[in-house]
Image 1 (cartoon, rainbow, N blue to C red):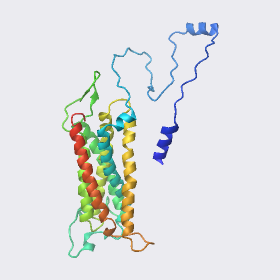
Image 2: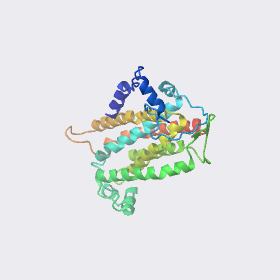
Image 3: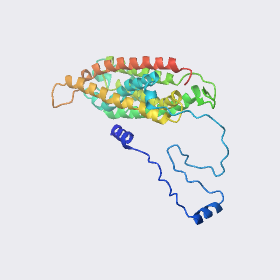
Image 4: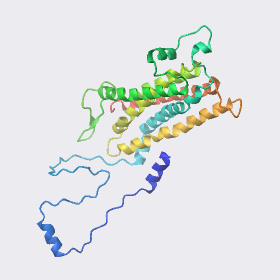
Length: 318
């Protein structure tokens, strides 16, 4: 629905110029207007008009203003496609997992003690012992709580950390960019780490998961990668393409996960239905999704490679 609304707005939304005031103004009205001291000019607001106007404006320095970047120029930039494909592969698979984790846990034992004989130790059992009620309750509800908790914590932690390690660049008045303070790394590194984290999580989901507790790691990794990506991407887009079109450019980039989510979701549904025994029941067990996560392991590896290429190309800018 959001995509349809954006498409309709881009197609039909227009800003019409204000109507011209009549040229026939009486001499008396002109005399009255001339007597007004410091008249307030009538400003027809646009999306670039400041909401607050300075009552005593001061002369502004002659600073060159960058020209607006067209959508065609953006789409012709190779870095745009590197970033868009990385987000499509990374966030599309993350949102597929988030949307279907409730059915993935069906038919899977709660812990490894029920799946194997002789007991065992797993990441999920550690979360249960250390986290107390955070992951308690079992089933999809526990996975959703871990997803939400890790997503929120990642956004709160990575935002200040990225500002400290990789401050956002500022546009220089005479062209180029400069950094307000020392830069230790590039913000693209956070995107690469998210891709690497999902490679490990999806590989574990495909090869090692045999209980619901084993999925705890995948839920936490997905929440972290999802939160980190949406935290650093806006500043990355603004730094890649400086100018007044940064907001529009970010909106275009976010269509990548909008496209990737249904692709991975339909992939999961198709593979799951192919292992369905009874048409009237939901496919349960690890056989329903192991192939899906082998595929997402490969796609996340591709996203990691693309992010490293992007980091090499833009390491001096962000």
